[in-house]
Image 1 (tube, rainbow, N blue to C red):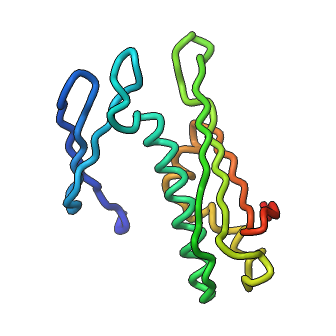
Image 2 (image 1 turned 90 degrees about the vertical axis):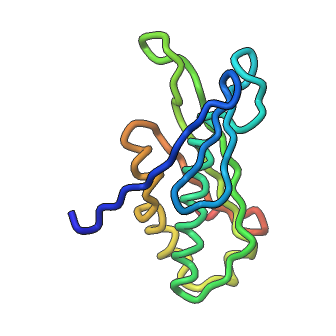
Image 3 (image 1 turned 30 degrees about the vertical axis):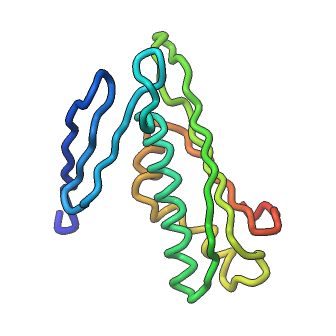
Length: 149
């Protein structure tokens, strides 16, 4: 496949359940940790990172789609709810992710918004990949709190 790319990272245990993540081509690192009793919440947990990856990808996809039409929706924000519970085998799993994106401006100030809202999720690499195994719900609101999607 001509468009295939490999993203490389390295995890190094720092203490107990704390791992420092480094990524090829990125200068800064990221510390992850489990919440108590396993860890000390010194950094985001793997579940939080998964939800954040979905929310960040959706936010970037929405921003990119609006900017293609020369629109300025900033500042964007995203609230995430990642539901964790037991599966049929009694093992803890991520059961669902709900991302609530908020535009920084009223919807009326943005051209082509309806078209963007219909399509932006399809271009979100992380969300569409995660959706293969975890339900992901997406809501979009404008700066006035009006739900658009």
